[in-house]
Amino acid sequence: MKKVRKPVVAGYFYPGTRENLLKVLENFVNRQSIREECIAAICPHAGYVFSGSTAGMVFSSIVIPETVIILGPNHGGYGEPYAMAEADCWSTPLGETVLNREISDRLKKESRYLQYDDIAHREEHSIEVQLPFIQFLNPEASIVPISLSGQMENPAWVEIGEAIARVVSGCGGTGKTIIVASSDMNHYESQQVTEEKDDYAIQAIMALDEDLLLERISEKNISMCGYGPVITAIVAAKGLGAKEALLVEHTTSGYKNRDYSQVVGYAGITIR
Image (cartoon, rainbow, N blue to C red; front, side):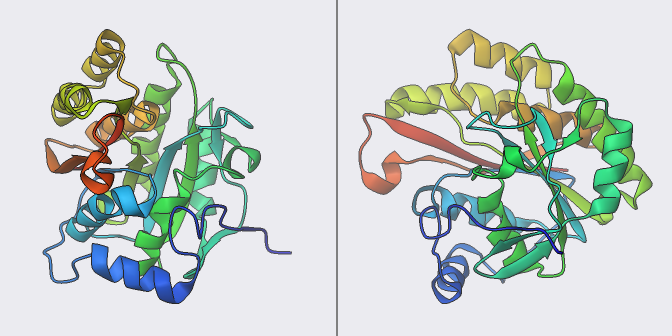
């Protein structure tokens, strides 16, 4: 029997019906924009009302190829710390998307950390909220959802990033696969503090320097929830020949709800 991972934040983080979700995506995604092949992208994962426009700008600028490897943090801490989804497909109100088991199996062989575990994905939203954009732009694309936990000194992210680079190279390269790292930036501080902390972290990401990013997060106590996925994506992208990063947009929740006392930062970045 086919194993389907049902959506857990449809109707909460994004519209719960196909009709309404399509309307929102049509508003966020510019179909007329020029899209380029990218090695990786960084997208926020808050509710669409807050970060959907930033995610839409990122997805409007990139080509969605045959497969998307989506890296997300494990907010709840359930299941294996470095977990690939085991289900056959994931669903949203737009339909079902198959998981690329060939790439997942290769990654499991290449990495001593990655395991199959659906528990880590059961209640997690960070990967799910990326999926409607992918389905909207390329309904035929497959995905490889990977949930990443761990502490700042954990070496797993680098090893997994290197494994991703090897596997992608062996499966047709970046023309057939893109990496999407799901992360919000600083959380629940003032607009001014968050913009300063976010800019400090974004500079390191733009330099494609994962060590500098960790140093700056620790130095300024930046509450960036998906730094593990971002570090993994940077390492993988450099292994695939990345030379530059482009900041698509940096904004905060304050610009949406006009509450600047405690905001969350959102950054959209592409890596080529």
